[in-house]
Length: 327
Image (cartoon, rainbow, N blue to C red; front, side, top):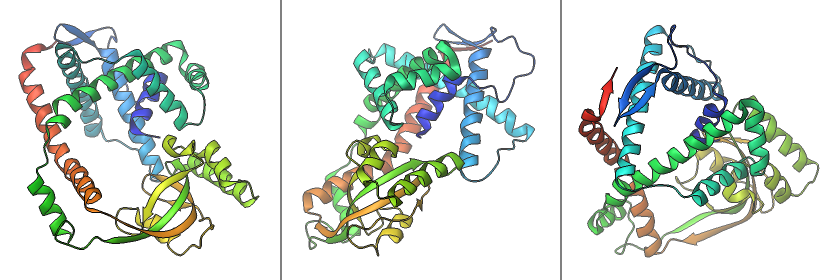
């Protein structure tokens, strides 16, 4: 499950995890561009952040145990997050950046597909745990995240440039590019069943899938009903070429490198979750110059984005100080 989805579900369920001491939740604690921020919003953000952190700790076999100083840091971080989010939404409003109903509907479809259920089933699951208010909160926060993503693309991603000289240097450092022979990379064509996380729930789910495979159920059928990768589950788990190089998780490479065509791996544990992979065919592919340039640009963009985003957000917070009033 993605961090965004975890956050949205925590919003919907509004699980209290770190209470603020005897505070009127209707109290306005700040305003941003004239819009009030209530103590309840801060409390909900604290709960979300702590709940997500607790889930991540549990996935790593640990238990979240915050000191008083850490609890205070969590509260301050939650408040700062709300302020930055409000400033971003205000910026988006001024730039006429919004989200259509179709975009929001598609995002809900993607979330439901990631859990291999219909949108209606997903809705009923949320309502069952968080009520109609939980469903409304999830939709509200989903729209807010979509707007922020569109703003970041407009303000940061679209303005980060990668020059041809940078691409050439990137490739030359790796003995690639126009002055080097086109490399061949060994790997496999494969299908994958993926379950996010490594906690007990995830392990139980992937173990059940493995049992179905061991009982000779077709891999593509199990992938469609089990895999949490929405991009591949609907195709029976088929994934792009998995290269035996540093591009794949080392645990995956180690588990499948020695498998014969048609063989299925045992359960593979990675930092993102659990996998079962079926090797369809061992092969090798050539990465032509166009593909090398495309991959180099993507890698350089990924390197540049964090600094570009942090700089942009810092400037947004500084320039927006006059819009923020702490009560």
